[in-house]
Amino acid sequence: MKRNKIIDWAFTILVAIILGGSGAIKLIGGEQTVEMAKGVGGASNLFLLGILEMIILVLWFIKRTGVVASLLAVSYMAGIIAVMFVQNQSIVMPIVLETIVWVAAVIRFPELGRRLFGTLESNEN
Image 1 (cartoon, rainbow, N blue to C red):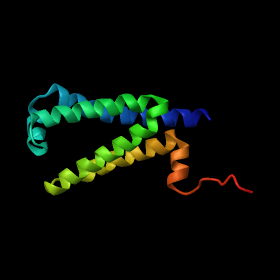
Image 2 (cartoon, rainbow, N blue to C red):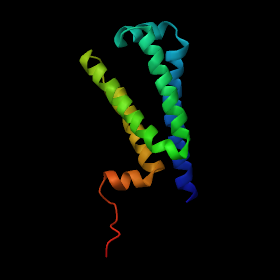
Image 3 (cartoon, one colour):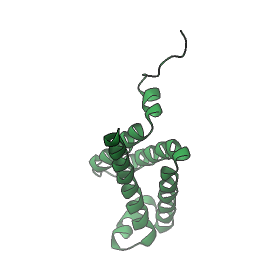
């Protein structure tokens, strides 16, 4: 039981670091963000994406909105994969990050895993 809690928190914090770090980089700016901005249509778009990541991060830590945050994060990562694919960039890292978000979501919200993978028990007898 305690081991499951530790794993749950480890994945929760890992996803928070991913979202928070990426969002902070987009909001703060710098040399790396100039290159990123070219790929997403400009600095204003990059700023909005940073705000979106921070909103997902806040929702991620609220237990009641965690499932929504999980789905938003997965959708956001899918968008990143699509943009990088179209730009002929490597999509390995976004796929790894999306997998981490999925695993964290299923560990943190077991009902999500049961619904997605068809192991939902029937209440009918």
